[in-house]
Image 1 (cartoon, rainbow, N blue to C red):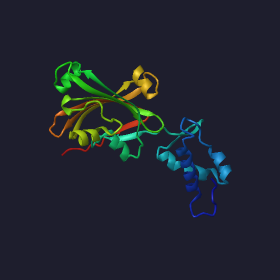
Image 2: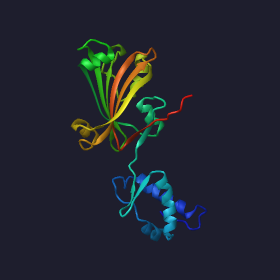
Image 3: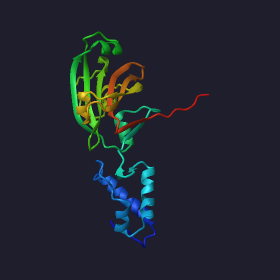
Image 4: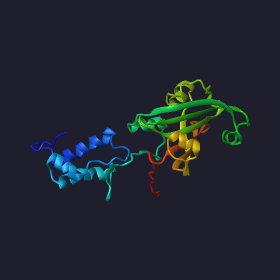
Length: 242
């Protein structure tokens, strides 16, 4: 890229656009240092202040991080979801422009243990469908879901679970998820979760426990999710009551 000194676009804005291209290229994703201010100033024939001005907006947006004595790197990008309104995970990601990829889908039939039988209020050893999905973007997985379904839902385990889950429930089974009850906490990744999410054992992950209910307020799904802490953020919008 060249800087057009005769353009009506300010030089700092041209520098900013150039740096955005570098960030989006993925070449600097793994901690590789972006070009230094001095190098960019020399490359484009501008002052270091102009380069610094072009960099400042990227810093404010959280796209890059300046480390004293080290340099400037691309900031780890996280996906933010809000808790003021509940959506399916696929819908949340689509609304945020994230291209969702299924890295692994496992479906099994298993006997309900004590915990699942109490959650669903069914007898122990009742046969139920369990679904495990490792999901992420085009670069890497960032969340691992495990779902158990109440027998009344009617899943056979033969469904195409590459489709959005709640689309299957609504369109194929006339089951309409209406609300969810959720709990969140941070935990250290055990060996299995670490292997699935490509992180080291013990690294903090966000653990989310969810119970999903239909329009009749009957539980239809019990789900747990493990989110990479460096890739995912929950945002809570709380309003003061009267």
